[in-house]
Length: 163
Image (cartoon, rainbow, N blue to C red; front, side, top):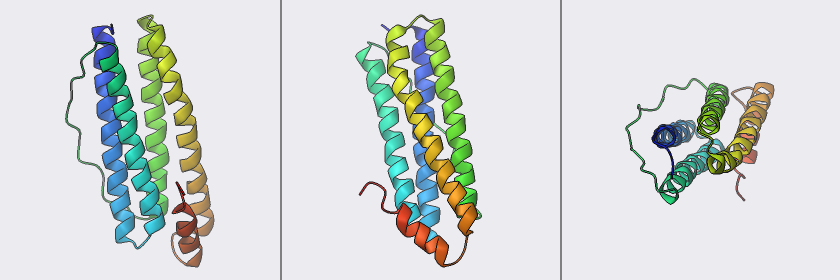
């Protein structure tokens, strides 16, 4: 059984995961409006991944006999200036999520909840990949700029995610 402290920490992180999903959906819609379907697809995949992360945590809490307290979250940002701006925000957001996962792990450590520490290892490794991917795309955007044929070519390549 999960402690009340652990349940509350998971409830907050589940809220954060679904909030992240909404942020990525907002970013996808921005890219749709900019005629960048590859970037939009990439963000839609992120949207789906964040939802699955939230559900993975939710299922874990339920499997451990705990209770999840669902909460609302803020409206996601929608005022993006460029593709580079979106990926700067994406990287910063993933770094924030990494910090939140580390905090959740710290709670599990304090609670001596070894099963939760083990389960959270998957999320810790996932965040390394998330930050790496966002950083790589941001670096490439900085190389090609936010306009022109190079951006269109990068959009096409980014759109192959998941194929």
